[in-house]
Length: 237
Image 1 (cartoon, one colour):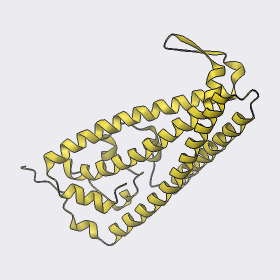
Image 2 (image 1 turned 90 degrees about the horizontal axis):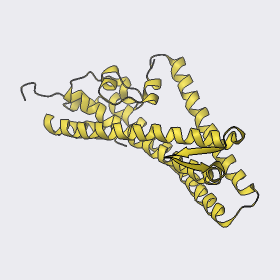
Image 3 (image 1 turned 30 degrees about the horizontal axis):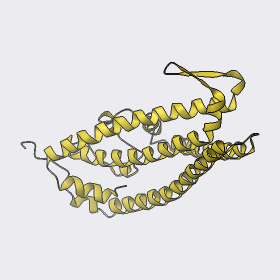
Image 4 (image 1 turned 120 degrees about the vertical axis):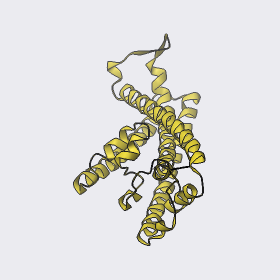
């Protein structure tokens, strides 16, 4: 992900037309990945419901074809980690897009920029008005000035991550314990474990990266180095 200094440098070195074209491409990309993220969330919730409440659902109809839920339950140890892994990668890309779009907005739309916006998860109303709707972004930005609300948001995210880790671990354990485990199911389970390992490694690396960037961004703002970059545009250009 861009540091704030790199984002400022990128924006200040480019003219208005170039930035507008780039912003439009970022907007379209962000819109598509938001849709895909929402779809993946629905898939994971459906698979969770099927796996935890199998007695209430016997079969599913997909594109006119009836599919036995027994097959879905066999594939769940692979599908759920894969969907969550993709969801994690999308979330990382979304943060990168939003951060650079926020800085471009300062120059293209001349929106105000403030020091508290160093955090990539906090966006002012002007920035949110110029990017596609995202449920998570809206939740995180309901009241960023309230320390209590920010604390509960952080607690919610931590609980969600712990719940996801617990569920994936349970899914992996129970899938290997199921009776009649055949070669195909074992292969799905192994691929699911590979995806689970990738999620674990992703979060270790991403946590370190986000922590480092937040620290560098805070130093960039506190030192006043951001004032060296011209994010204004010529109104006659």
